[in-house]
Structure formats: C-alpha cells, structure tokens
Image (cartoon, rainbow, N blue to C red; front, side, top):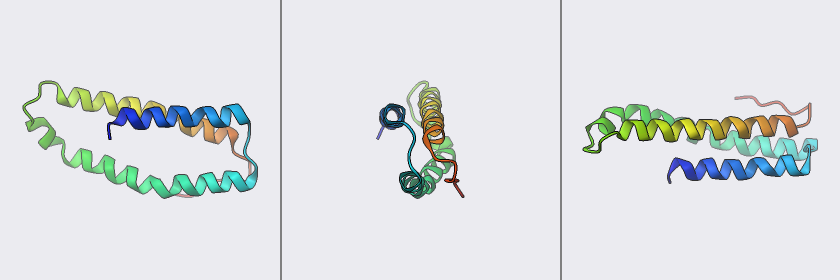
Length: 98
C-alpha cells in the first residue's frame, strides 16, 4: 500500500485518544503490546527500502527517489504525531521496552 494510506490511518488514529482522553493502565498496556507487535514489520520494511535504493534509482521514472523520500517524510510526520498522541494519553505506569 502507498505510504499515504498509512499516514492517513495514523492521522485518524490520533483523533481517538485526543477525543476520549487518557487510557487506563489496562488499555494502555494493550495498546503498547499492539504497537510493539508491528514495530519489527516497520523496521524490516524500512531496511528493505534502503537495500533496494539502487533498484529504485534504476527505474526509468524521473524523480522517483524524490517521490519516495517525500512519502517517507510524510509517513514519519504522521508516525511522530501518533507517537505523541499515544504518549500523552498513556498512563504513567506503561513504558515501552523495545
């Protein structure tokens, strides 16, 4: 899927904790566990993109690297906002371990 899809999903997800307020400890731990479950997939995907940079450069599409970089920057912005929303709404006793 296109990175903007994930950015849109993250943006929509951010509105939930902002609208409902802080999580209790049980919900906070459940959300943290869910996030920890998909972190490896994101890391692996980003590593694969770096590994395939030369293949992207070889594509006969003018400006493809700029498009990819722009998409990744937008996804990073959405991810940072998602992280901030979760941290803000999380109870004090819930800490990530990665």
